[in-house]
Length: 187
Image 1 (cartoon, rainbow, N blue to C red):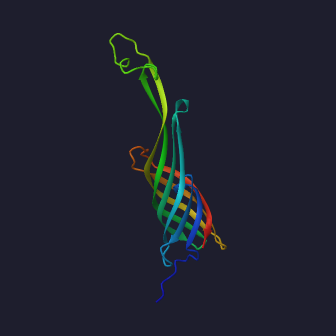
Image 2: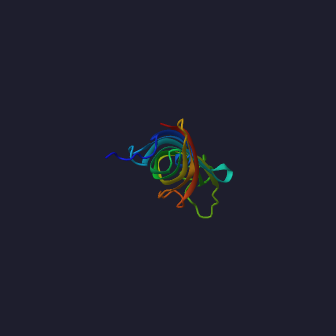
Image 3: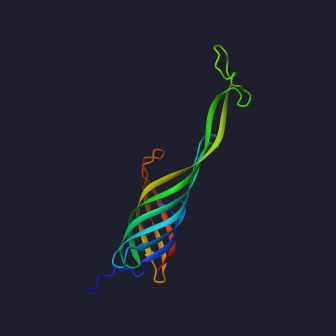
């Protein structure tokens, strides 16, 4: 007895994704686990960028290289599908932050002896700002709810919404919703 096909003529695809799980932009490979299932997976490489500005343009910016990994399911016909998925994004992030400190005296002219507190004396305070850079590992979890269209000639179009969150102590504890759009080739 022969197994049933998954109904998809083109089981693999490569696409460029903007926003969503790819953050800013990314290239992804997607495939069904085998010819007899509509369950599949995707892996890619993407670039992330974010900026948080504050008073007088003091803030931070983040650049990252992320690998989005996902398991997904396609519900629909050969051409038009509802795509549902769960995944994670693992990445290396370069964080640039502006640090601000209030120091005693003019920043360059105080000796160690002059910096010692003395009762009754007035100390000059200096606002010192400097840039700090560090590399860090980061991750997030995401869902995928979207529309996938594959034309007869293999053109792939995807669009949807990605709810994403992380358990990182430095990150917001709320779910972020990111739209996405992707164009590529199915084969």
